[in-house]
Length: 422
Image 1 (cartoon, rainbow, N blue to C red):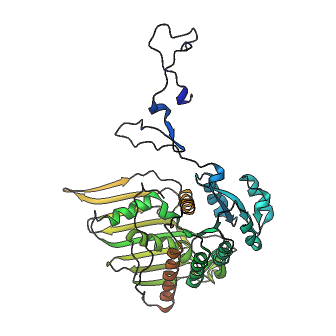
Image 2: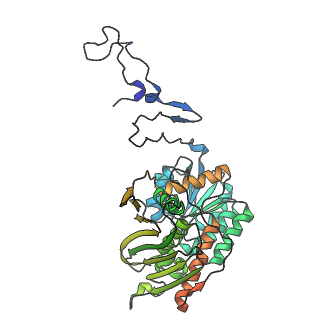
Image 3: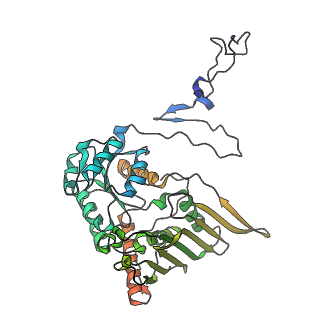
């Protein structure tokens, strides 16, 4: 296969062919701009080569030179980091991994070699203050167990580094508030890693709901369940996890509903259930169902469990139709379906979107905020607000009654179309 810029165009003059079936020397015409593209402003663009009936091909990614990308230190080398976050960083246009923080130096050296990170840029957790002395590091990505987020965010802020922190933000709202204040005082940005808010399908579902095209939303059903394995996992330890299914996977339902509505609940009611005699659930809940009521009158019914076969769905029922998002909280594989009346027939269509990798989109957004001094789409205040709701849900489950929430101005993320830059 040849490069487009060297593709042979036959000269229409005489005797262009050689005995080998190739054009004679000098028998080439320069390719058109539609084939060769043009370079300007540090990127290469192409004219769309497809017909009107097909989706245009996007332009090539505009990669910053490595030394200009935001250098990120990744804190924690567990499964999420090694399976998702570091591979995503490796493919980012505007960010790159430049340091690692881990309690396992042997593992850290192996990972550093895989990603071209200098061995001198490997730190232990009690050496996070040394991040301040490494000018390559502009930001950190905290990927440790929930109960450690506060200490690691505060350490990064003291080192003067911007912070991207995995969800849930913390174990308590008090910890979350301390994290917000520490980053504000240090003059660094704090973003919470709500990856679904950067997914094209979730964003389009929110746009459909908030556009008014299907009338007002009335009911939402959100489910996120999975089957957990052996008991020797940090997620079963309350001090590290802060709770069970609710903060770990139920949070996707909670935050996802808020994203769909761009609204915060005014009342919540929850029930938590644990199987009898299962030592895994001595400190945290296995299953929780919860209801949220919103000022607009919408009621959301959410379910989350560590004890059921994997399922991740959300359905929003509106006055004039419904929006259904399958695999809503998965890393990939989303399917978006919309039902509405068109004329005398009910139309059900599946929308197929160009969806990029969620972790890479999330990191690119964070890097753009760091480089261009912009406010993150999902700031620390977003994580703090969810933590307040989680505590209200636990209080409801413990007391067996609905809990009314104080109404105040809080952070709500408005819908974006999938075409908007993340």
